[in-house]
Length: 202
Image (cartoon, rainbow, N blue to C red; front, top):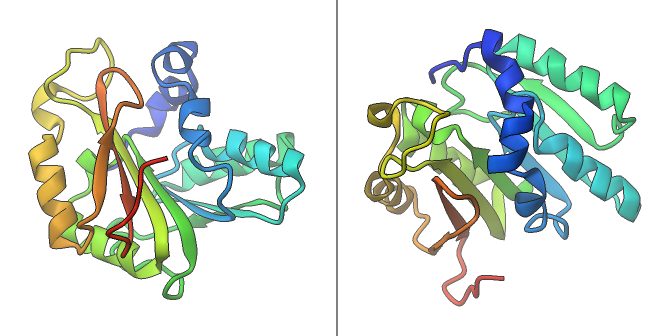
């Protein structure tokens, strides 16, 4: 898995990002879930606000934020203390491949991979491992930079992963039930349900 450089970490929490990728749109899809994996969590841009929602609802929930860079893990842990959500958000430093997740089968009811798929070296193996740790009828949400859209931010166009390839990887990993959704302009997004052919998009 390629690393997002920590020296650019300020871009992940920038005011500009709050304009083009406001976290509440994604969080609205996750509020009813209780065990969430944030895969490639970066600075906790989504994990922390979701944890605050969970805390307000006083529901017993867990968010596990994983990343391959210890500096990003430290950044999340600092936020966790600032926002007093240490009872909800747990961090985990993982190996660069992240193709063997340190969690039992059927552990999470939701997994998010945001702006990270294009950085993954072995996407098939990664998705198969996510399939393993995801509960039956659990959801996977993938959002990434659309190579067909021109934005002044993000990776170069030739570094972005086309949707056709994303869908091939999903099918290769047993994720056959997916819907493309319009979540953020300039990005493609998928909501994927494990083992539920009758899933209706919320």
